[in-house]
Image 1 (cartoon, rainbow, N blue to C red):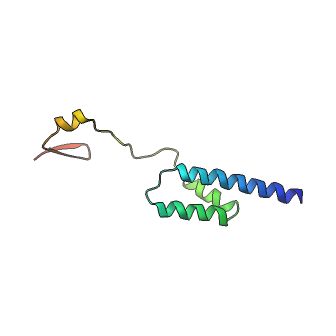
Image 2 (tube, one colour):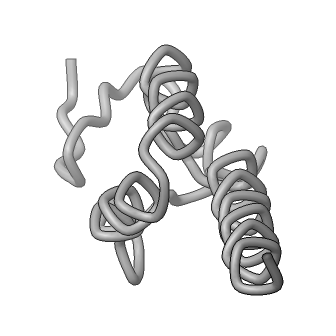
Image 3 (tube, rainbow, N blue to C red):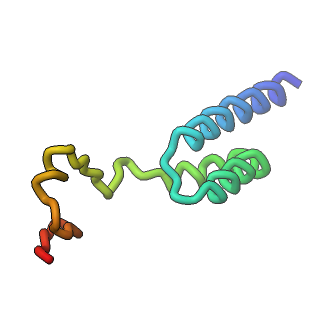
Amino acid sequence: MLELSIIGTAYIILNLYVTRRINKSYYLNDQRRAIHKILIWFLPFIGPLLIMGFWRKERKVKFDTMTKNQRERNKGDFYESGIGLNS
């Protein structure tokens, strides 16, 4: 009986930890977030380990912030993919 309660407690702690990480993670699609949450609760121990395998260590996409000064300087220009184009 003690072993079952230890396993149950470990299962709940692991799933709560993974659920929290899913809630904080960057997802392009909210449907995928919901599917991951369902998966971790219905597949004991295997679900969280599968989801943790999909987490990236760092984002590959870097976001740049354009300031107001930069927007005013580039009026009339089209800017895409780091290449400025004059119209």
